Image 1 (cartoon, helix red, strand yellow):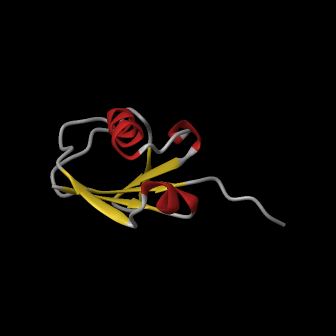
Image 2: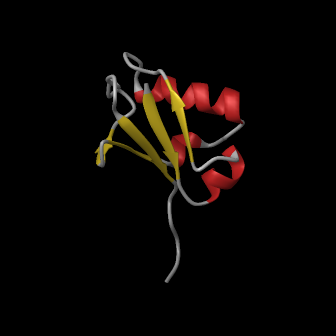
Image 3: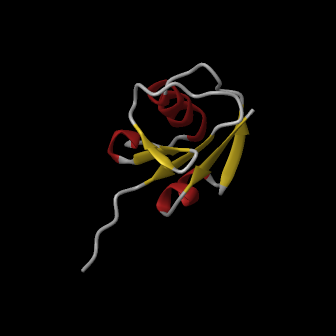
Length: 77
């Protein structure tokens, strides 16, 4: 199983702070598609993704037990 964390407004859209999904063997891009479909979270192409607290590309493979975080862009001044 994998823990997926949502930050900022993504948490509000998904309705959860975190979820558990079995996505081992999938890429970050495939996970984004699953999240968009199942939790109606759109525009995941603009968010940063981290696996085990290290930024990850869309091609990165997810392994059993990995923790994935979706971090939206932040603006301010």
